[in-house]
Image (cartoon, rainbow, N blue to C red):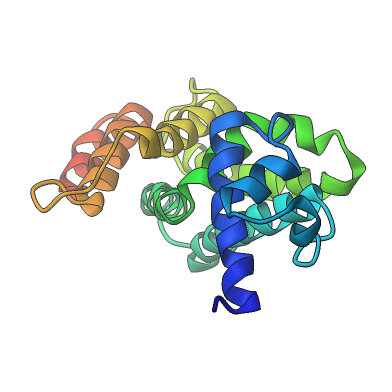
Length: 205
């Protein structure tokens, strides 16, 4: 017999996959209940509403992301190292929560318009400011190019990493650690000033 906590996790797993595939708005409580083989009414024993399920899915993802970004800033290392670390953190979180990452990308903006999901916008703003602080700090220190738009660099790097969960599968020949090094090398090379480009490329190998 499945325990109550086990049943809850089963519901979350099925709901997460459905939200990622169909979208939050297009997924009904009945869809989720059918996916786990229970009546819709029984599902409410575990979650008060569909919104409560969305909360459970996204809060863990966003908490991991915020903690990871904070840890990078707290180390106060070189901006190039911090940018590599932000890419690594984003990749690790996305790989742990691939469906939640897709839900955030696909439905985050719409959900944030609802007062209940205001925390999504708050988390997004914190993560965004972490990236911008590192990029702008690198510009101020003269290691990143001044002609680059920090917001554009942030969005390009973040989305490149998050979108990779849709097509990248780590293997023995090409593990996740190599992927993040290669990804970081591309962005560091593009952001670096003069001779620092070679140094950033060498550091990533």
